[in-house]
Every structure is written in C-alpha cells, then in structure tokens.
Length: 301
Image 1 (cartoon, helix red, strand yellow):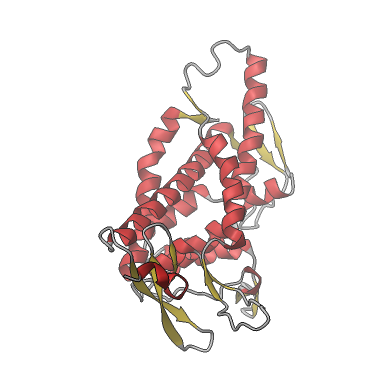
Image 2 (spheres, rainbow, N blue to C red):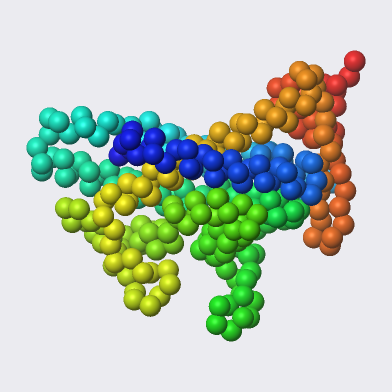
C-alpha cells in the first residue's frame, strides 16, 4: 500500500529527475519535432491495402497505446489507495495487519513488473534518452531487433529487456542526465523484476526473500529486502509513472500552445534506415493531432 509520508518524501526527487530527462530531450533533440513524435507515438508498420500505397511511417495510438490504456486502469486503481501510516491499521489485529500487508505486496509486485515490462514506457524512456544525447528519433525501433556486445566475448548478440533498461536507459542517461540515471539506479532492480516474473520469492513477517539469489552474479546479489525497502521501491515506481504522465501533459500543452489557439502544423522528420530522411507536416486541428495530408480540409478557409 502507498503511505502518504513516503510519497511526500520521494515525490520531489522523482518528479525532478523525470522532468530533467524530458527537458534534456527537448533541449538536445536534433530536430524540433522529435519530442512530439515520442509524445504521439511514432512507429513503423507496413500496411497492405489493395490499390493504395500507404506510408509505413505511422503516428498515433497503435497497439502499444491501447495496451497502456488498459494497464492505466490497473495502475490508477492502485495509486489512489493512499493511506495514513498512523491510522491504517488502528482497528486491526497484528495477524490481520500482517495478512493485509502481504496481500498488498503481492499486488505491488505485479504493478512493479507491469511497469518495467511495458513496451510503451520502455520505448518512450529509450527514445527520450536518445534525444537527450542528441540522437535522432528511431522510427524503426523494434524490441526484437536490439543488439549489443556480449560482456565476455564482445561479440554482437540479440539483447532483451534487461539490456534496454540497464545499459541503454540507465547507463545511457548517466552523462547527459545524471539525476535520472540515479533514479533508475534507485528504483529499478533487474533481480526483482525477474523474481516476480518467475514467482521466485517468499515472505516472512518482515522481509521478501529472493530464491534467484546467486552470489557473484551481478544482477542477483539480493538475498532478501525488508518490507521498508520494498516500500521505497514501489513508491518511487508509482511516482515515476505519475511523473511521466505529468511531463507528457506538460509538453503536449507546450506544442499545442504554439498554435495560439488556432489550427497549425509542424514539420516532423522521418529517418529511414538507409540514412536518408524527409519531412511531413503534422497538424493540430484544435481537437487532435494528425498528418496534415489527412486533415487539410479542416484548414480550408
């Protein structure tokens, strides 16, 4: 469960760190429309419609967005359950309190796993780090085509979620946005994500034990953590989620304000895999964003 005092303790730190990453992405983007592409979810998808030659460069909800909307309902129902520590269990016995806390931790572990396994948020954070480092938005990004060096042989190999979160996002933001990198260090633990995914944990009266503990293995060094430490992990993740939403809204409002209340269009750069690029106008109609070519009738006088 979420305790008010812990939320208040970590909120300034988490909000500052997440905002710093969005600001670094905005300030260092190599094209003025790249952050808007992140907000609007640009992606590559070949579309086969007989008789029509449609661009595979798409922008808008897509499956990741609708997946995330479904997860939002789950996150939102949990993050509204904030309690005062002093009064939370006043009328409960010690046994009832322990049962309630353990059931809450089970639910929180699911929240934790869902957040770090979310394609929508992992891709968004990775693209923000790329922009913050002055790199282009990657329209062709594919979770199944992420490669990196083997830490022993150095040979290139396909990588998974751990590499994206640890190496590309946490380590990738270290120089350009150290406060965000530190937040990732503080609230993301690859071992915890794995124990939840494989149900490799147990609970005592005061600790969560991890059965995937392996001495000498870098990402499996935790034998257990006290409930108090877990409270910090889940609190920061919930605040992380809130801060992402807050910054999406902040920069959405920024881009919309450029039209000063009128419909307008901005150029977005589309980078091809061969290194070439072109620009397409992306328009705000006063109600929604869309490719200008699809809504230009709304701009007719």
